[in-house]
Length: 223
Ligand SMILES: *Cc1c(COP(=O)(O)O)cnc(C)c1O
Image (cartoon, rainbow, N blue to C red; front, top):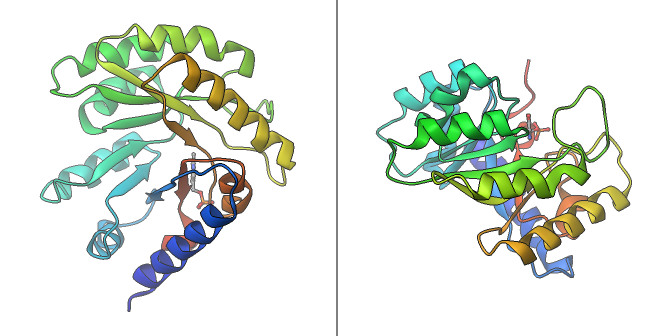
């Protein structure tokens, strides 16, 4: 077995174990984060059955997506910070965006998505640990931005995303889950809590995450 296939197998087993232990009855989707990794690595993961991939850098990802266009059942998720001059490429190449953090970006994604058959799936990024170095909205701003995204014809509001700070307390994860539940109660299209990475998958899943974004544990450390 290749290392990537082997790693994927182990991660899926861990996800299953944590889901069993979780009291939230959550189903968890694995997003393989392939930023900085070559297309050969993505192909290996794909051959091992992985279909959802996350990327952070627009230029890099657009090239990789074009080279892999024959793998037409891959779903590409944009998870990095968004510059508004990159919204066109994002809207045209991805089916999900996890990092929407302002109306201007939502407006532009909506405009550029109009030529596509399906709406763009959107999660709002929440700066849950209130770190000045991280993007994302304050948790008190979720409702306004959610209303706005929900009013955009070519966007579908799917949920919220966070990158808790290193060694964040469990309460941070619980807060995200509560915010997710109140959003879900308001919008029937909301079904996604995007939370958990290689280092904090367990806390995230036990707290009700529905999508984990795992990079280094699948593809190895990045340079
Ligand atoms: C890089 C990245 C990940 C994956 O991180 P790992 O620690 O390698 O699993 C997940 N989410 C976001 C937003 C990232 O930028």
